[in-house]
Amino acid sequence: QVQLVESGGASVQAGGSLRLSCAASGNIASLWRMGWFRQRPGHEREGVAAVAISSGATEYAASVRGRFTISQDKPKNAMYLHMNSLKPEDTAIYYCAADLLGRYGWSQPGNFQYWGQGTQVAVSS
Image 1 (spheres, rainbow, N blue to C red):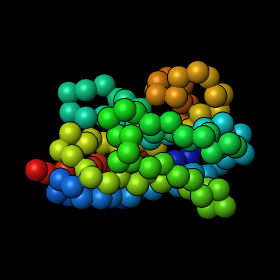
Image 2 (cartoon, rainbow, N blue to C red):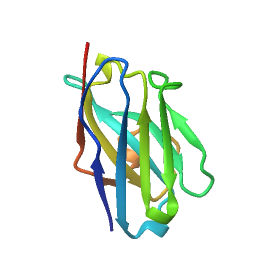
Image 3 (cartoon, one colour):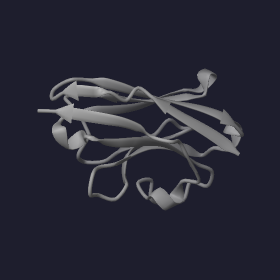
């Protein structure tokens, strides 16, 4: 089992920055990758970014590439999402997720087995 706890969500103005954190505990050594997803009002949950635990390789959704950066701190069992140049359309609940298997499709929620409770990000214009 893996437990994930997000933090760092807040209300900010457009153009601002936030850093989301995800603290992982449990059977961390078995993880293949971790990711950030978000669910905007009226939309399905979508992949934002992911990082392969071993290689550090990262993936980003086109809508956030160049503005968001995913990082990991292995000694702390933590993952972060640095969000810059925030836009109102980034408003969503952001979820941390963990994957044991590494199947193709980093942005598919069904490929992740463990989820945090979510943290709210609200960006005003």
